[in-house]
Length: 95
Picture 1 (cartoon, one colour):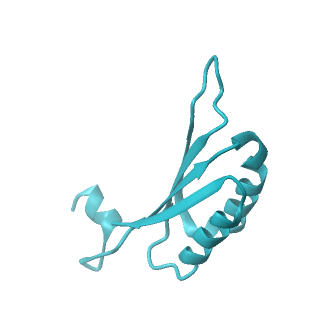
Picture 2: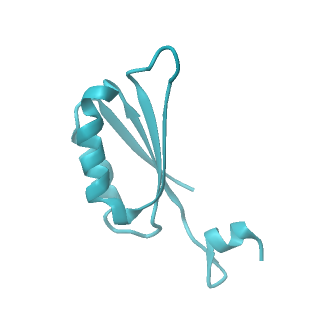
Picture 3: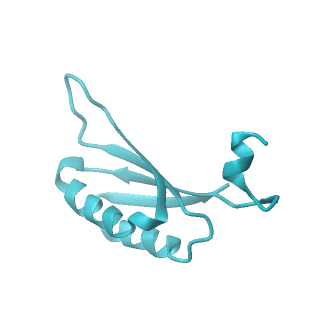
């Protein structure tokens, strides 16, 4: 059994994966609100990756990618709550 089959299979059945992509404008101003919301929904998030331009110029825009717990009924409400925040656009992708 490969590592991929451990992640994507349960009882020999393929499980749908939910990934949320979050675009952030005005990252410095919105980071606290976004962090609080993600903390409130922390049990739904299996993995999180945050990206922004760093170095000599620190970008005010960012991208966060979340892998959610499969089959969690609260996933849609998380995306709805994210989209209510100013400067945040979230979209769920199922693979």
